[in-house]
Length: 204
Image (cartoon, rainbow, N blue to C red; front, side):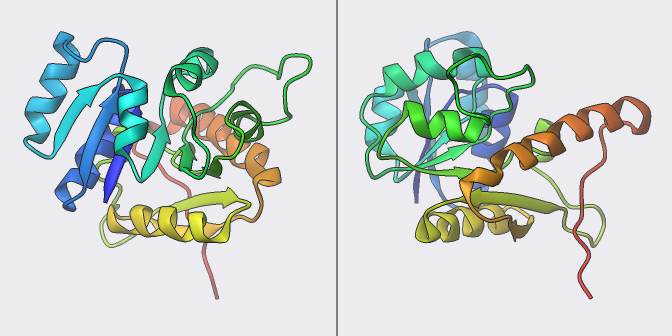
């Protein structure tokens, strides 16, 4: 699969590495494709990764992953261009309260800013460094996802499963705020428990 990743920081970089090891082709859409950090990241991945601007990443990708800080979301989506029909995985977290006029959750705000995109919330409730290696012994951490497009969720679930997560469908995009609250809880717990932690849904 061709995956365009908007952002090449800790979240985007680790997801890109993980998917490349599974045989996917990755294109990072960034402000400076020739920057030192981007070149170093590409060197660690190899021939299955390249970089360009956000619009090029969108043109390349069958799936687009939004992996920038919340402050940069509106601008990178503007640069990305038309996302109609694209599966857009929102891995962001808006840790501050929503601004007046914005949607209740980051996921819903992304859907508002990218009309026509098939938005799925995912990969936001665990430490970035664990995305490239989420296994805890023989345990697979839960990856909670939500969205309004069933086929898009199936695709994202497959991508999450391939890199080591136990996927939990958390319903519609209206539940994105609940997943974002998990991110806040993870951050707070990591201060006392350390960053080698993850959430797990147990079933009986």
